[in-house]
Image (tube, rainbow, N blue to C red; front, side, top):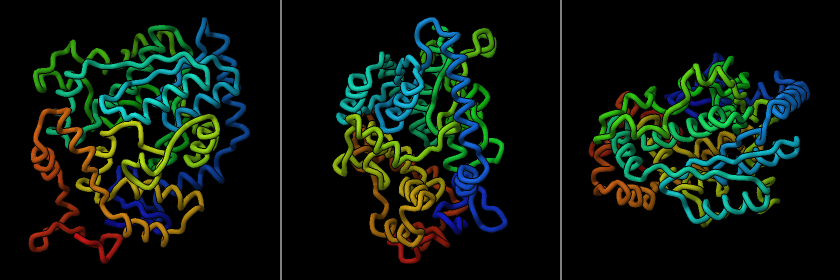
Length: 374
């Protein structure tokens, strides 16, 4: 494992490539935001997209996929500032937290939007999550399939001309230059970057007894249906400089709630608080990539200039592994499985290219913190 010289991300993280100077693609994306992207020009582009959407609209101007989290608050606020009539669309996680429910309800009420909250048959989700975890070591494959498919299908089915997503992940977290500078989240992007471990819904038919008809909510519109109406689907963060801390402040000023008592993973008490299961998605990065959600949060803070690299390393040393024991317990109850099942499956996905056995312990040679307690 090699680490970025500027932030603390390892080159094992998907999308992260270190250049000849030892700087990662995530940090280079931040450089792009400050030096290469003409934000005034991008804002004018956004205004043209808004005008086109309002010209094509027969009711709702745009869909904003919302969870009730800080970023979706910011997305709605920005869209409303540009005069767009927003329909909020949510995939309802089976692990929704009380604070997540409260923030979602407050957002709908305070920001004054119409809202569709989509619940998938819990038994379908349970079986799909079991299959995804056992086959890929990834509990969040069903989540990512649903949260991308539902808004896009709704835009096509109800002739809503615009879908406004949040950040461009390749610009914020690392990816190839062309993807960092992209503005559209289209069907090709979802298939390439949709965090489904290079699978599509047909790959899961038969798993845990799931039939083709069980995947209705997970299916993207086909290319022909998409082309007939052609809704514009964009990253808001490709038109306005994205900053998670600023988004949290904007959301809080309108009524968004957060706090240390809601922290599930990482170091941001205003993020990843909507779902009891989300911490598992991030925790499994430890086995696969030798990193944690805290590495993501702190690397972004380094880029924002709010912490130094040395301070970030000290924070990782202090907070440690952050094993999401409550999330694991809740997930196993939902799945109807013993906790031993979770840990046995996690071990199967330990990346032996980076993990080495030392006596009775697994270690990461060259880990960022030399005195880490293994």
